[in-house]
Amino acid sequence: MESLDTSRQVVAGIKNSIPPDYFLVPSYSIKHDNPTTDLVISRRTQNTQPPVFKIVHGDPVMVAISYAMADTASGANQAFSGGRVRIPFISAAYKHRPAGSHPNDSPSYEQNLCKRSNLRLTLTTLRPDGPFTRLYPISATSGIYSNKVVINLGPGEYHESHESPHHLPVVSVTPLRRPTVKGRGTIYSNEHEKNTMRETICGALRICLYHNYDRVVIGDFGLGSVYSNPPQALAEIWRDLLLFDPVLRGQFAYVVFAFEDPTQSTTQYHWDKLLRCKEYQRSRRLAAEGTCSASTRPTAEQSHSEVDEPRAPTDLAIFLSVFHPDEIERVLQMPSPIRVAR
Image (tube, rainbow, N blue to C red; front, top):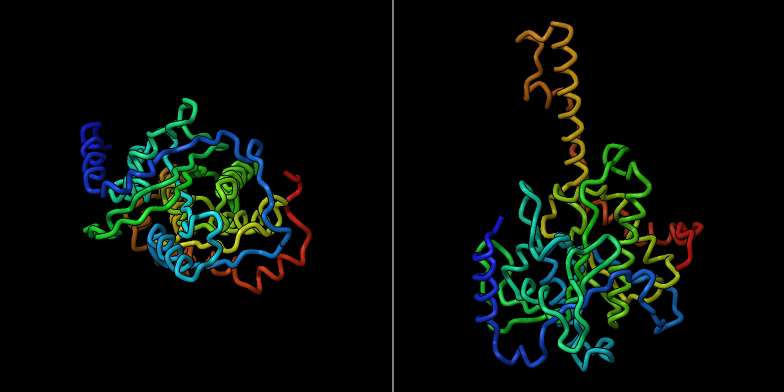
């Protein structure tokens, strides 16, 4: 865990490396406590067509910046941006403080982004003309909108410096952490946990619309070993909200899911966890029977040979399948899974 002194040094280093003209419009954050119920979202169009879904491999923030630059160059829908398109990134945030983590967790994308930008500083800065409010903790039903996160370092191990830093909005919400799953890691065991994740995602998307953004970039939100939500069920939550939620449907031009690691498989994580559990139960049973000799004790080599099956699909592959145009067309012909109108 990073010390307070280290955090201050990182913030100071980022702040000193940002050109002065970037502070003409200050960076700040706004807390939305209950975006699914409190935010009034006006429809800019009566169109109910689904957005264009794009599943790509790349650093999510750089993907958002590159798409924004391309849209700006093409003059795509700049009415709310003063001639410059900006695309928000939905960030999986630690609930108690910027860039924090639970003990023994792998480094998160939020932590990496805080080293490359002024996100940490922005997440502790209130809007100058706004009321005082506590930004943290972030509950499952709340989110933080950061208006201007300046990216001055690129992705990768060495974080190359950008000559001309870019900035983008960031919506920080907290995914459900390590829910119980079944179906070999494909579905939620607990309906309440699934509904909680749906509420979190719906809130994040509403925050984007409330601040006049009709396109969005999402990383591996809620996936990987840290959060380990079932990717199939999670992809379907995103899809069903964007296709059927009466407030969200037709409001987004496109939605991009950017996977930094195309080989990541949260399903494989669940398979491996299940295998370890079975091995442990087997060894306990053999020990109780008094038959766990050296010849019968399971070894790592035996365990892998006993489960001679193909590896689980990657998260990227699952999202490609769920958001395939043919699959979207099929789902649109079915009754809406969104039971309660918001």
